[in-house]
Image 1: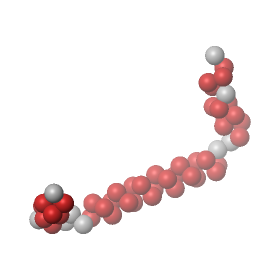
Image 2: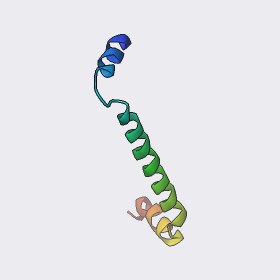
Image 3: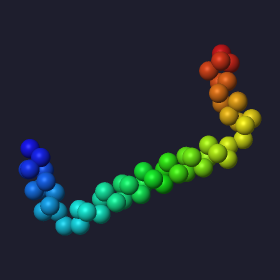
Image 4: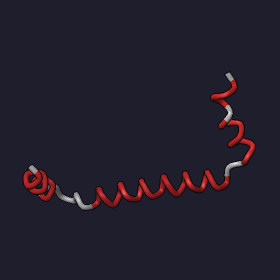
Length: 55
């Protein structure tokens, strides 16, 4: 099964760029998420964390 998939993927022109694009999207998302967590205001974090307890 893996040999069939590998042979099929090798026949696609430019297929080597897709893993790079997915890695860049993954890395950018988590860097942005990390940046948001570091720069988020503490009041906002407390307000959002208490939403389930308000009802």
